[in-house]
Length: 249
Image (cartoon, rainbow, N blue to C red):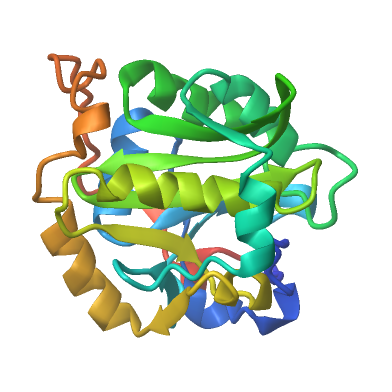
């Protein structure tokens, strides 16, 4: 089958992506263990079809967009916006995913299958949302996975000025609470994310960062979530049904 550029993700201009290099596999499933194993190896799922539909692709961008400790830039205008916004965590996960998956968004890629997979990871304690509220109304947010000191951010949305940026600020504040190193993965760097301090690193450098980050203890706010208390998922082994793009025709 032909391999198309990925749909927009974090505001990505799809023409900047390089499917032949960034796409590393096709197929497999979206069971919790499969997804967690992939992230631990610098890989994430996103469909290859229209609006993120099948077949399922597995991506490892080179270069990779990351936000590192000390790099967050909060502009004066964003500081002003933050005064009128409230940040909450894990109180409206499904609503945040729905906001990110809204059909009217350009380049939408979050399918019902993807949404269900991350909802299951949320129930298990691996996936988390950062929500932005204004006058008790959800006006923005983001969601992603916390594995050790890695937070792999999946998508964000806004319904008020600077609300998605405020979600990133809220996430960084949560990661900073322990005073320990952390790694925030945003997959691809965009002009929008660059204003917050996101930089690009090579795939090899990113994989080194991931190996170190996932071996560390979770940030304190997520240590009491279900998976830390004993819920387990089986991670996939070789022969899990994923094939390289060269075999996907």
